[in-house]
Structures are given as structure tokens and as C-alpha cells.
Length: 72
Image (cartoon, rainbow, N blue to C red):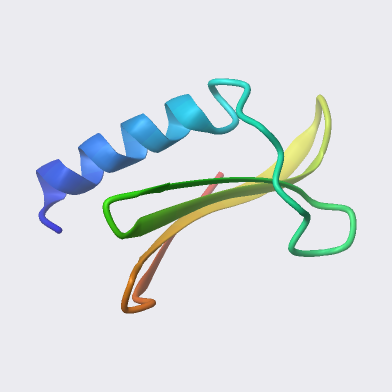
């Protein structure tokens, strides 16, 4: 995945998860709020703790389980 493809994937994923009021997924950690989106062999996880005040991260991985993370 080149930089342009990554940027398009992340923008699309954000529209389908937290930013776009996506459907929650089962929590991957106790107390976390998780939203998952998959497209074209890539998986995006938006995971956060809290409500109005929160801390979280986003990550993506491909079918070969090569991860890349983003922290907010």
C-alpha cells in the first residue's frame, strides 16, 4: 500500500467508524469502545476509552497481519 492508498483507506475508514457514527464492535479490551471496518483485505480498528474526554488509537492491518498504528 503506497501513501496515497493509505490516505484514501484511512479517510474511508474514519467515515465508517467513529467520525461517521459507525456501529460498535465487541470490545477488544475491558472498558474500551471499538469500531471495526474492513475493505479490500485491510482491517481498521478505532478503539478508545472514555466519552467526552477520551484517549484512543487507530490501527490497520492487512491480510498478512502487518500492523500500522495511529495514536490520538
